[in-house]
Image (cartoon, rainbow, N blue to C red; front, side, top):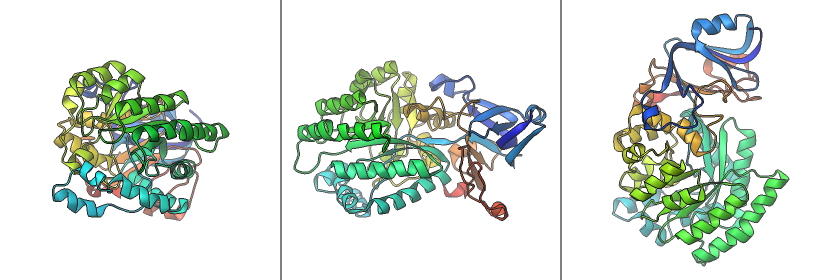
Length: 447
């Protein structure tokens, strides 16, 4: 097949498709036997989408007359879909290192929050920061996530709590969408906490009557494109009624519902999410049996965050029960000042060790199911023809090394986005920048 193509990855020992029949998500049975090819190659076109996947000799013959901007010999290596981080809070200023000592001394998350720490401490610093300062730190964090294998990241606002700062954060996220070679699903999270001096009802009224109409206006003008709406539904934060009002108002202007629920106390958030047609609910450490059944029926993804349970010493989310009940289980890092983790491989590792997920389950939860949680599984989360060419190459012959986080050597991340500039690896520096999928190199031992 003649023609010009962007990228050829050839002779991989193992190519983990994850899905092979266009599945939008995988339940437990499907996770048990992920789609895998041995001794395989794939081709990414000039438009950044996968054009062919198959046995190495078949691809070699099929594309014998083609030219490629970039060829990578993957002999002895494993190719995975780019990892998807389904829950992050990456735009903020300041830090909360001092709170770690408070936690070690026995203070709970809500005790720190009620004393003016936690979210409110970060809000104070984020309001003072300039847009440029926020963008520079955000850019660095995204780059760290990308080097750890994430090629699509959900990014929330939520450390403003007033319209001015929430919009500042969303502009930073929009700027990164336009300028960085990493996929972003943006989330308005103005209901991350109740602002000082307001009740939950007053805060909800402000969001519904002021924030959301402004987001709709900016969306129509093309200035900001927000994908999801989030609320922290929690005792002492936003109650079920306020949460319902905000989420429904967001849905009414075209935002996907993707919110925090049942984290510290059983709030019936899962039941509410199922009722409202939520795409995903995060945390769910305190979800009820009825809530699990409800989100399974509604095909609402459960985004589990093992880093949060680890850092806050919470009980682990019931991953096994959810999987057994037919819930679509996804994973996220919950990167924030309180859970400072850039690495989805580490999240997968914690999911295996602490939540007792299998390695296949963790990989599916960090790829196709995480993409589903963001409404992106038609373009991301698996290696299939027609999908975005976002790929991770690990210096191992088997995917199991990725979940175990024990491999050493190089990880190559190839993003098939049009117009991306090559980030030169040491052996490529002589060639200079080119229009080609982004490549990055890092050691898996540091992930």
